[in-house]
Image (tube, rainbow, N blue to C red):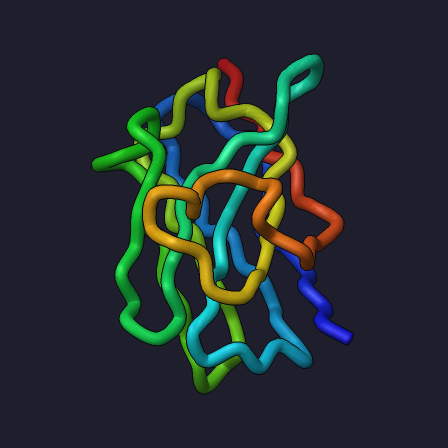
Length: 126
């Protein structure tokens, strides 16, 4: 059974940086997708960044392009999200997710992902 465990969330001031980690176990898709999603209170879950495991091609939401970077360390079975220049609107619960193959145009849609972690809270406030 796929297990995803997020860590690294914190309360920070605007402009700060954080790196989220997702420890992955029992995920064996060599042509799948892994990603980060977030959900703020009263809002729908939205895709932040997704990486294709075979090609390492990554996509990101327009709202985080140039500030957030997704990466993975296969040796450590860990997915990362480096978040720079954080803004108050980035405050949310952040979730790690895994899936089989998803066509590029659909990779930021949460509905295509079948495996989810419990989430880690990020709060950006002065």
